[in-house]
Image 1 (cartoon, helix red, strand yellow):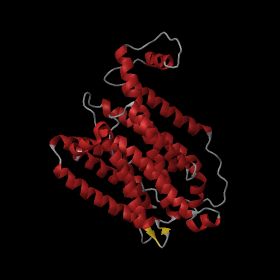
Image 2 (cartoon, one colour):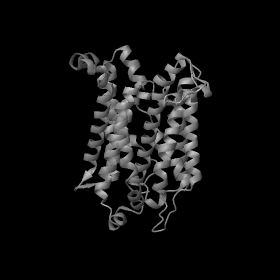
Image 3 (cartoon, one colour):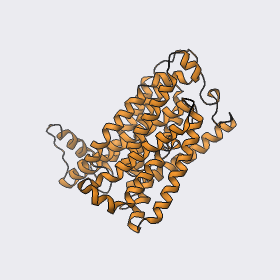
Image 4 (cartoon, helix red, strand yellow):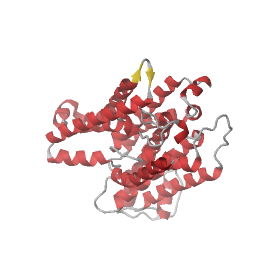
Length: 364
């Protein structure tokens, strides 16, 4: 372990030198895709209003113009198309982006215990959202019909501002030092937490309930309008990360080695941090803070598939989507008619895995 607290490459990512890595065999891709399809169908069918599988399939086929025998009742149709389907689509996008951001940042910092929240992104988004909630009356007077965009807009700006501040503080001598960025992210998160605490003291009881539920994350606010607004930045961030698979593999050899192999390391760092800020900021702005997806998914897949990011990034997107949609299904069905915050469930899953990974590294 180095003085900065960041483990060297050899301790976390086994170097493979110039060895050629074969693409992932079809079986894992099929398993991950089948898992996602299964979770999606289960999430569409199960809930307070039951949707029979045959009628579910018939309703989806009917939307593309096919004549089917099994159809949903009007109430079931409304629940499926207006509530559950946009919720599932949003869960797929957010889960895929959070997991892929985690995989990319773990490669950038060469540490499997890194997640997007360590850059201050999530805390900055939370600070922006809480500020918008507390200043609801003032914002309503100025924004009028755009009032509904105040909380997600403030969350996105907070996420972007916090990440850029951490990157600025982490730069030294024209270089972006990964250890300093992590320390700056911790400082930014602490400052954002203090700001949230002060704003919470100013909030009313109704605002406190909104702040508490939003801070733990939820897909309950999903609608087609929300999905439409979030899809663009989420897909852009995902595309930016997936195209860096080869350069991330080279970066695992070390920054100097990657530079000798033709990688502009400084530009790569800036691209990855910008993509993470865009993706996590957009995700948090529509779902609230959902932790551990970016840590849990890539860490487990790295153990199963190895460090090749041509496999890892795509697999993380699939498994992250499955995890978040499955956690949301559990959140809304475990205590009907109440709904649990999905961020609390992902934390329940993530904390034991984090402890196990920490113990594994200590033993190594």
